[in-house]
Image (cartoon, rainbow, N blue to C red; front, side, top):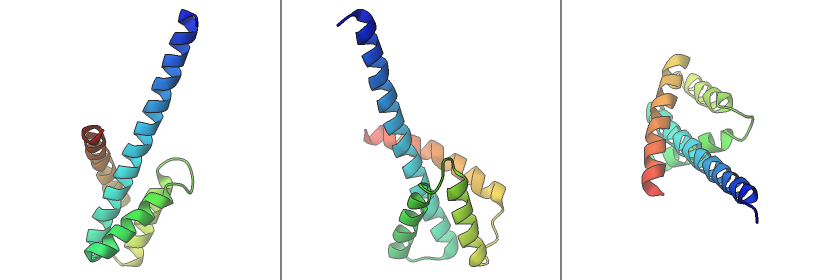
Length: 107
């Protein structure tokens, strides 16, 4: 194997690892967001865990964060819990940083 091929394989391995890490971070952020929203909804611990899983699964609807944001906004709105979109986005940003710390610590 040439140096170029070794280097290319190294970059591919790093890219794959980075993508897996980003997936884990996003999933953790979405779970934390679901738990945050569940608290606002007044759900008991078991229902909160189930709701958090629903939020994680909603991220597979379309690329990006808009599907997660829409689910949380719709659910809070349906329960007459007044939370502005910018507040949810701010919480998503805060939880993303927390999720990154948690995933790195757990790895």
